[in-house]
Image (cartoon, rainbow, N blue to C red; front, side):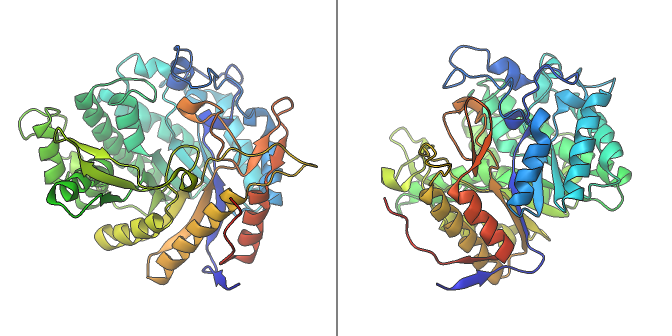
Length: 458
């Protein structure tokens, strides 16, 4: 089998988020987050679970660091819990919260693993949500205050910083569709939320660079290529519509200093905006949002195939058979990752790109003699890493890849039903059990190469 080698400085890592793995809900002075509150509402979490303990990373971080070391990881993308740093959202800083991340960063560096923190991965302090949350412009000052506290404490050791993770999910899933915290269903509010997230990114980028002059700063977007279900004008327009509100609504302001005109009109047409104006847009906002990035983080899981529905509304259509989908129902489509990287490079030209999340949820078998065989996840990782390799060969400046996720964890509205981890958790002891995919990924990282492989058995 042919070996496909990656550039010498290519970073291999894993990714997690605080709300999904830390636990320690009532430990170390942590405040309540919107997901802590959302999980108490009947029917919001598929299995009825709560993120109070999750993987107990708050107490087992050293164990997880040793695990990453054993897997040959060169980088670790994690998020910092805003409620752990500022339990009231603003004002008094919680020293124990900063101490926790202080120890984590020191431990990573001692192990030769580069820390890659994200400031916001969806766990807004509930007290700020009670004031209106991301829908209110005043939250931006609270976010820059939080950014200052974290950058000032960790900036002497952390050089790569990410502001937000997937603002589309925050705005659309949390404020338009109601599937994520805080569970709102207001399309106009979701547009305000998206704008305030982007604006807070631009302002916090300036804060980080002021506190850490050597910092590299980026943002993480989820990218989903949109393809028409047929070559008809209607289906092509449906794909354009999806691309406009999912991808370009965030890429265009960040890299071009404007919202995409066709997507604005789509929103006007559906009554989400008043007239053709963006009422939340103030003079100077777009210049702040478009502050130069040092890198772009790109999360990729699948594509969307779009058609125009009977009532003239665009809708996604499933084209892959069940056996070609993950347990999330997402089509396994590695070509989409290559397409995404090529498109972003061609249309927006970020200086560096990291694939900051990529992975698959599958129902894994019980351990047999301590081994968990997950050949479908191995095939997923291999095919997507080969897509990254092809993009690099085509000139895309991809600097690293982070597998989602290190551990099976609290998967938001799915609770613990969906398992993305390279490592499973013993349900009784919370012991970490590396799956076969973890060892495969370790070998790829240590060789800095991926082979063509073979298709797994069904």
